[in-house]
Amino acid sequence: MEIGSGINSMDLDLHEGHVIEDLKNSAASALPEPSRWLDEEIERNIITTTVDKLLNWGRKTSLWTETSFTACCTFEFISTSSSRFDIARFGMEVLRSSPRHADLMITAGTLTWKMAPQIKRVYEQMAEPKWVIAMGACGISGGIFADSYAVVPGYNRILPVDVYIPGCPPRPEALLAGIELLRKKIEKRSIAKGN
Image (tube, rainbow, N blue to C red; front, side):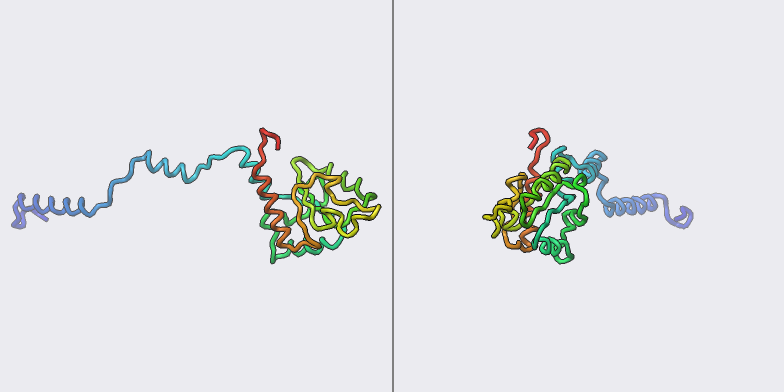
């Protein structure tokens, strides 16, 4: 507004004052203190954890599998690898052809005493930390062949087994439950305690 258009300067000052007050009343609240929003930003983008939790998370989410299947449990494991049961969600979709690249051995089927030294050697070639799952009645106790002179009555006679999955053969759901038990066991490991 121009001063010379018939409005005196006092009215102009009052009008401008009202415009400024309206603007103040309709303005957003003040910006938060920089330290407050900075703390929120840090909380949202920085994670604090322990070395044990970080290593165990990596180990449990990428179990690399070496298999020792000598019988019918193989087909149940193959079913578990299919898209319906999706073993890939545990980072286990690729089976390792070398024990040096594996940290989980899944054993199933009848084990003979003649084959036992080779299975033990494969286990010993695996890098630490390593785990063993005994799958099926034959893998756990020798199954219906347990009384035979040529059959090892369970892989636990030659290997330290971490998880047992019973059944003849166990369903894919049972194998997934056993894998989840192993993952929980891995979560509790501690580097300092060595277990």
